[in-house]
Image 1 (cartoon, one colour):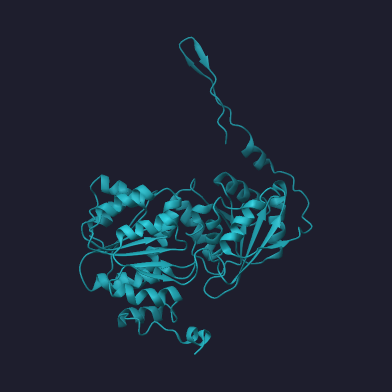
Image 2 (cartoon, rainbow, N blue to C red):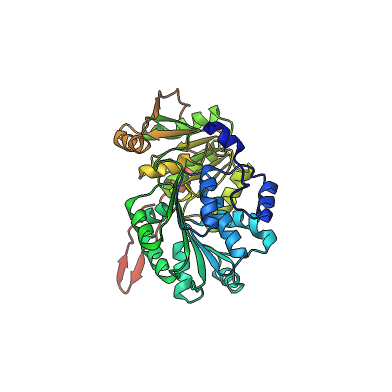
Length: 412
């Protein structure tokens, strides 16, 4: 039997999933498990430790979510999921609620930027599952609001991203707090040595499930790159938005850059929203929901959202700036080409970024198609609003006794 036929006949039946959860999956129109789900769910239900490696967009949440819900609802104890970003934590909670609502599943999401009082109320309801970012969970632990002595199942979601974002000390501190006698499932798109060492020290004979080599880009994503001067990038983006009709996700290296791109696109009358660390949790959620619903055609984001955007049907991902880490390129372009639908990833690189391109190609073990620069739209005059936003803010001098101090103007 060939692999193609196997993929066509693969179902959730026979994986050890309870009939009630199978019914919920059918209601949610999940009929065929992804490879990471097919290999991880049976082992997870049996209570085995798992190291799961799969590219972004392959359904890792259900791969650990189904075993966690099934085991917790049929026994005692709590589950803990650590995620690197607020968006990933909220999306995991959304998935868990869809599956576990009819079971009476209670969850508590502990993330920065949200009300501590509301989180304390959720904790007092004794949730079955805690979904948290490491920093906020540490805050609750220090204030003795949360106790982790009843954790039976621990999941590290996007573990490599947590280390990239500097959460390694918090993760190690949390691992010291949870019981040693537990099930641990670690899922990630890449597996650097630090994560492997962490797994070796904190897992018991883990099963390694690898459905794609680390650094493998999504198969259904067509990739191309333009070599373009920095000052011409916004006009090239304008040209692409004229060529493509669907939703577009644009990645900027910095939050300041994201804000400028968003401002320029609004000046072109494109419905645009932005997600970066300067936006409040409410603003980020509104932007993501608006992008999902079609209210915003373009979403401009920094790498904080590279793994936190679970939106189907994104036509094009544009790397307005190349990422600092080659691995982030994989996660960015994995936002398109999901659920069996093809997508496109277009990157902008300056003439001085040839080395960065080669690093990405070495990681993926494939070349990215270089495209000739098309004829770009004419320069647009800056609007008064844009000119005003760039104008330095006047800072009044301060007087102390007989001396007057003129504060230095802060760079924006």
